[in-house]
Amino acid sequence: MEKIEFLKKLPIFFNLTEEEIIFVLKFFNSYKETFKKNDFVFEVGKEIDKIGIILSGEINIIKEDFWGNRNILNKFKSGEIFGEVLALSKTSLNIMVEASQNCTILFLDLKNFSIDSEKNPDEILKFLSNIFKISLKKNILFTEKLEYISKKSIREKLLSFLSAEAQKNKSNSFFIKFDRQELADYLFVERSALSRELSSMKKDGLIDYKKNYFILK
Image 1: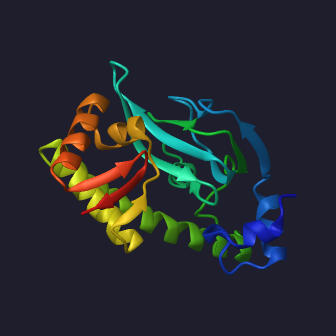
Image 2: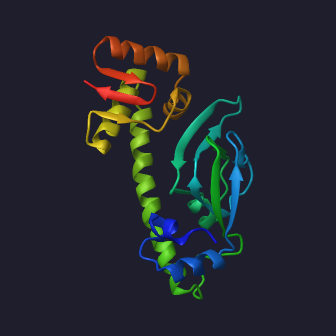
């Protein structure tokens, strides 16, 4: 059984007692699995029928087009969850989940679970309430991403993204969760063009940076 003290701190188990968390884990036949960097957690076309809770490491949610161009839809790190909407709605999307670092994931199997069942215990209803709240926050973040990628130029995309990060961190200096290639994939631009624009913005005195640490001037 995964350490309950760690799980109790996660938003997905907010307001659940230790006994209720153990009940949820048993109810969904939870199990732990480890992945190495660049391993596929879920491959393209595979139905996602379980919720993943990241215990350590990071994963990327990736969409590829017909020609193999990769777009990072989102990145999740330790303590965060993924796959919940697809698993609960029994909907399949043409996406894949890849480990961007060595990671350990706790899976909750929803293959035979029905969200509409009137027989779901109170512990499960509390658990589902937390999932819905998390999903609402994710939708807000996705709306922000649409704002970034809708900008016409790479500079406008970067300024919109970095401005939002500064506001979230309440500081003009902060770390972002993406490396250069991941940031390019996230903003739907070429890496070389992104790097050129960052250098240009630095030369123009708008920003300073080192790897994934940025300062807005």
